Image 1: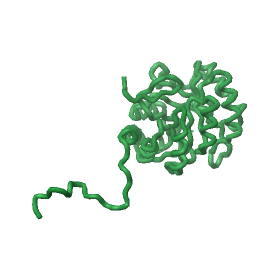
Image 2 (image 1 turned 45 degrees about the vertical axis):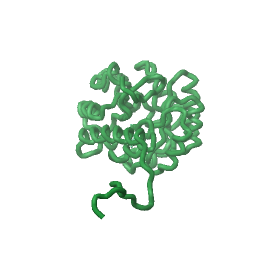
Image 3 (image 1 turned 180 degrees about the horizontal axis):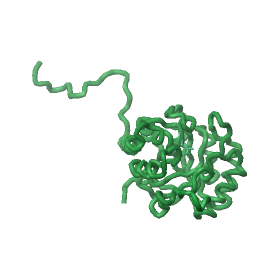
Length: 260
Ligand SMILES: CC(=O)[C@@H](O)[C@H](O)COP(=O)(O)O
């Protein structure tokens, strides 16, 4: 057993990197990237990817079998609470999935979440027994509210989905983390390995990403870089950063020098 697992809804995971499955060349590349990332939780846009809704089309589960990976259906493409709830119910019917990623989009240009619709959907889904990992704005009050409602993980954005801009508001993340009572994962907008390392160094419990791997020139190499970035950031967080100082202090002892 690993000493430092990520625990979500009572289940322990060794990997703190969650990945999406969109934007890859094909399912085969998706699988190789997932393996290179070392991811155990894989999120899938139920409205866009075939998980068995179409019996005649290739099924992603043939390359990512649910007995090996935790499949996290998500509600990407939903603009209302009603649509998001319907999508999660379909997930339950299709694969008996109750761990879901809730995202209710408010605007096609920013893909920011519509918080009113997201609260509404979270309330219904939690009451129906779903374990909700929720995509949120990086607002400490919003994130605290989702945790109090019973979401099993809260996932503030780093930057707009697909933007690759990295962690735009580390100060908000610090407040969110200080108040956290459930796992906090950065979701969306990271662009490269140093971004995920920063998220983990801040104390995030994990990172969920998609575009930064799928849109890299070499997705498989980037997947590996992301895995290492998450591990390095987590270790640095646990090790505890040295305090920042304005002035220099010599790296080697100044007392007892051999020569005057
Ligand atoms: C895959 C998924 O759920 C996305 O909606 C997610 O937010 C990832 O965003 P990036 O593609 O910016 O990593």
